[in-house]
Image (cartoon, rainbow, N blue to C red):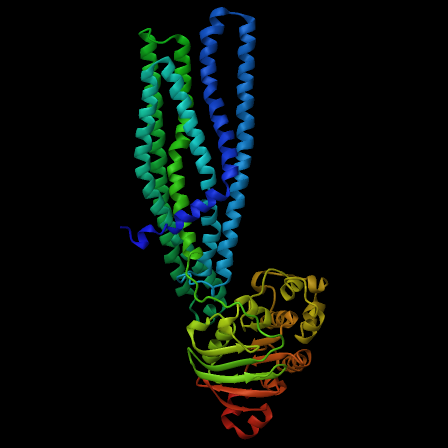
Length: 567
C-alpha cells in the first residue's frame, strides 16, 4: 500500500502537466502543422527517388512537368506548415511563460502569504524569468518530438518498402540513440537545476549589495562585500561551465550517433544497389533520406534534454508556488474609520505591548530602542503574520487574524522609513494607480513642492531607479507624499523626516496634522516637531509603553524623555 507522500504528485511534474493541459489546443494544432512539415520534408528525397526511377527512364516532358509540380507542392507545404506551426507554438509558449511569471511574482510580492523557504528577491526574480521561460518550453517540446517521430517513421516505412533491412536499421538505430541520450539527459537536468540555484543566489547577492552600497562605503565594508559576491559569482560561473560541458558532450554524442546512423543507411543502400537488390531510384531515395534524417533525429534526440531542463525549472518554481501559507487570512473587513488597538503583543523586542489609538486621533510613539520600532512596524504592516507573535492587534474592532491582507492594507497603510522609490516620474511614484484625489495636497504637505518647481517637467520629472537622481531628503519626502496621497483611514509613518532639515521638518509636521485631521494617524519617531504636533505621545521603552502625555508635558517632567528626543 502506497503512503500519502508516495501518492502525492511532485510539484514540478504538476506544473508541467498544468502547462500542457492549458495549451492542449495550440499543441494539437502545432503538432499537426509541424508533423505536416516533417512529412513534407521526408517526402522530398522520396520524390527525387521516384523522379529518377520513372521520369528519367521515360524521358517525357509531361512526366518532368508533373515531377516539378510535385516538388513545388512539397516545398510550399514545407514553408507554410513550418511558418504557421512555429507561430502557433511560440505564441502559446510566450503566453504560458507570462502566466507563470505573474503567478511567481504574485507570491513573491506577498511574502506574508507564503513561506518561500528563505528565498531572496533576487532568487525569486530568476525563477520568475528564466525558470518560467524554460518551463513553458515544454509546450514546444512535445509537438516537435511528435513531428520528429513522424519524420523517422515515414523514412523508415519508405526505406522498408525498398528493402526491409534499411527500415529496420533506421528503427533500431533510433531506439539505440535515444536510449544513450536519455541517460545523458538526466545529468543535464540535475546540473541545470544546480546552476539556476547558484545564479539566483548571485542575483540576490547583487540586489543586496546595490541596496546597501552607501552604508558599506560608509564603514569600509565594501571590499569584504565584493569579495563575498565574487565567491558566489565564481561558484555560479563554475557551474555554468559544467553545464556547458555536459551540454557539449550531449550535443557532440547526438551528432556523432546520428552521423553514424546516416552513414550506415547510406553504405547499406549502396551495398544493396551494388548487388542489384534495390534500383538506382531507390538508392537515390535512401541516400537522400539518410542525409535528411539527421535533422529530425537531431531534433528528436535533443528533446529529452529540454524535457529535463523544463522539469528542473518547474521544480524551482514549485519552491515558490507550492510553499505552504504562513497564515490563512480571514474573510472579514474592518469598519471604516475605525480605531487601532495593540493588546499584549510579544514579538522580537516587544514585551506585551499595549496601547489604543482612537479613530481620528493623531498619536506619536517615541521609541527609545530602534529595534522595538522596527518590530512594531513589522506587526502593523502584517510582515509578521498573527501566528508569529503573541497578543492581538485590532483594526476597526476586528482582529488582524480575521482580516485578509488586502483588506488590512486598503484600510491601514504602514509607510517604512526606507520605502522604495521606483523608476518613472514623480507623479507615478506618488500616485502609482493614477486614482488619488489628494495628490496636490500630499505634495504640498510633504514639502515636495520645491522639488517639483525645480524641474521644468514638474511632476512629470523623470526619476531613476531607487531615486538615484534625488537626494536623501527628496527621496524621503517623495515617499511621504505617496503615503499621504493614498489617503487611507489609518496611516502609520515610521521616521518620515530623518533626512530633512529642522525648518522643513517643522512645516511637514504641521502639514501632516492639518491634512490628516479627523483621520487616524500614528507616527513612530523621535522628531520633536512631529512629537509636538501629535495629540499625545506614547513612550516605547524596553518593549512596553512606559509613559503617555503630550510632548510638552513629557519634556517638563521626564528627564529621560528630554535626553531621548533632544536635538
